Amino acid sequence: MSEVLSERYEYAEIDPKETECIADLRPRIDGNHTMRSAFSRLTPSDEEEPIDNQDLHFGMFIFENDEDSQVRVVADLNVVVDSVLVGVSIYILIELDGVKNKPITEEQATALGKWVTHAAYDFAALNMRLMVANNPIIEKLEIPLKPIKPEFQFVQLSDE
Image (cartoon, rainbow, N blue to C red; front, side):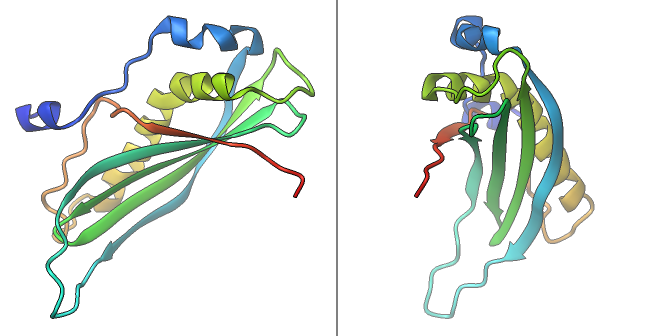
């Protein structure tokens, strides 16, 4: 891994104490798939400034379970390189073997997100690498092997 990458990104670290609150849930990954895998040239008009490169952004949305034992996670990995937007969205289904018919808390959702971070990043980064391999338009894209720290969002379901 280049020195530049290791200085640019904050990497995801898992502290076992942060995931203690989900031990009783007995989570396991039940499945995953790619929802979106795309790149698009962002062409500004003549009056606009060129679009600057942007670092990788890794976001995870953890959806509250609706009285069942499954938690859904959507992870997005996006970057802008040479005026090209590259993005991948993946879906992961987490089965909770230790709980039935009880919604998770926001604290548990964040802990589940941290627990699944490495798998989600690896799956999204793999899809991004496959998409841009040998693509002359996107030559400068560097994707770290270690998971970068995600931004978590707990999505609560409502009856409205």
